[in-house]
Length: 340
Image (cartoon, rainbow, N blue to C red; front, top):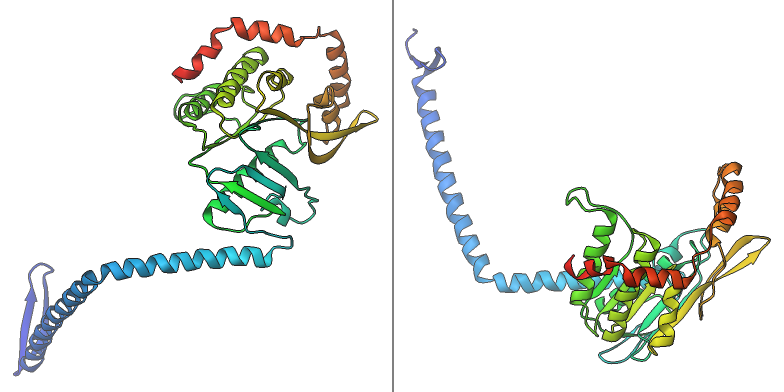
């Protein structure tokens, strides 16, 4: 080893390094400087954290104000960029839910869609809407439209309508769509009953309930019975409800309860074809066998299926409403609802 050099050996790696006494001293000083730097850094950070903790309340208020400002800017941007008119809703505690020419805030923004506005009026003497109409006539869109307008109003946003008076709701319940749950080993009918039972057990006169085709996941007779029982409960509760259904039997509820009103989405029938107007009209009126009239509108439907549908319809004995009522009054399926 030359004079002025020293050997450093790493036993773990079985390596040997050579350096000078001067470089070794500089390395030791550098390591000490790094240690001092880390100590000073931790001291500064500790002081900074202490100062921030003392002002944490102010920072929380600042964060809340920035979030509120961001929300208001987003609301203003929606109203500014909308091609149609938005209005400031009148929010009340006891008044009715009144919407004049309400629109779906998302669908009306899509190109190529001629969206038709519709009215809504839910009050103590008209708290339950039974909405009928063929498939694709606009029932589900209308239900979602009303729910979105109520949510937007309670958020403090302008709403897509000509006029809106919104009564504040404590909860908004929805039973829309159909699907099973493999994770919980629940069929479509069981999922439907679980969600419906939750609505029945928790809805209040200050809630808003949206139900779309309750009872579709089981037989017609059982579905009518369950839908009838749930409807009677919500009607007696005077809970504002929009109830879309294909069961014509439920229309008789309007003759039994004055706060139950019938509405339908008007469809024009021409040459055995359906022409949708997407307009909500009072009363119960619908096209007969609208499912069969709608089938030819589906692309690539085999003609053999279309011809077979008429033959099956002609050979099937009609089931009158009395058959359905007698079926569900004797059937124990309705008793499943409270236990789900």
